[in-house]
Every structure is written in C-alpha cells, then in structure tokens.
Image (cartoon, rainbow, N blue to C red; front, side, top):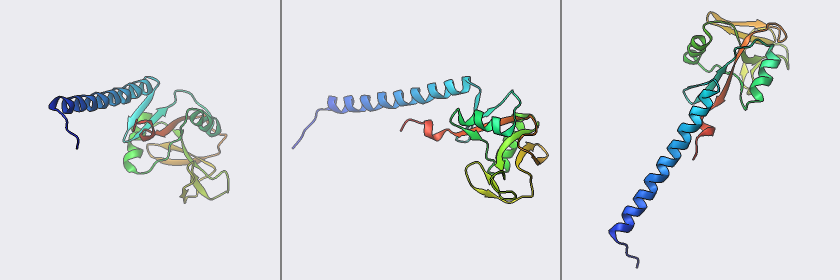
Length: 151
C-alpha cells in the first residue's frame, strides 16, 4: 500500500495549478498575437476584414494562404456581426456556384439554394450576386479559434 504525506499532496496541487496557469498564458499570448495581426475573435471563430480590394478568387487565395477561408455566414447574428465589422460595405463571402451553375455551395462544401450568379457579396441590406472576377471588393476571412486552443 502507498502512503503520502501532506506535503506531497500540496506539491501535486501546486504543479497542477502551475500547469493550468502555463496553458492559460499560452492561450492568451496566442490570442494577443493573432489579434495584433488584424484578426477579430467572435464566438469561437477568428475573422479578418481586408483593407484591400480584390476579386473573389484572389480574396479566397489570400484567406487560404493564412489557414482560413472566406466567411461562411451561419445565422442572422453572424450576419449582423459581419455588417458591424464591415461597416455595411460590400465584402466577398464564401458562397459560390462556380463549380456547377445554379448549385450554390459554401466554401466548405455545404449546399445553399439561391438564384445568385457565380459569387456573392454581402451588404448590410443582403447578399448580392456578382461574377467572381467582378469587383474588386474587400473580403472577410474566417477560421475556427478552437483548433488553436492547447488541449
């Protein structure tokens, strides 16, 4: 049978607390670094709104080169957040039917039905269809924040 003194228990608790503090500091540091580079945190995702103007294809390339993709708008609350950070200006979103005309898909492959053209721009008043090489427009990248947390 094993026995331990009270001091062993205190050492284990102190080590556990130190580990929790270290992990928390790493997460906070990572968050600070990401925010410094222009990313905004909102509900488990990071968003980047461009200050440049590009075509849909160029905008998507910019996002994917940074481990993100054009934004997928999941609900009205996220749309309102996008309207806020974009100032209601037109921004490219991750919605396209460039693979099959009339079959709208988000950049993650999920379907969306609409009569839009090849790519979509979000304004505060709604989504509008444009040819992907039209524009240029600003864009918003999105990536999951969860995968950046340390387990």
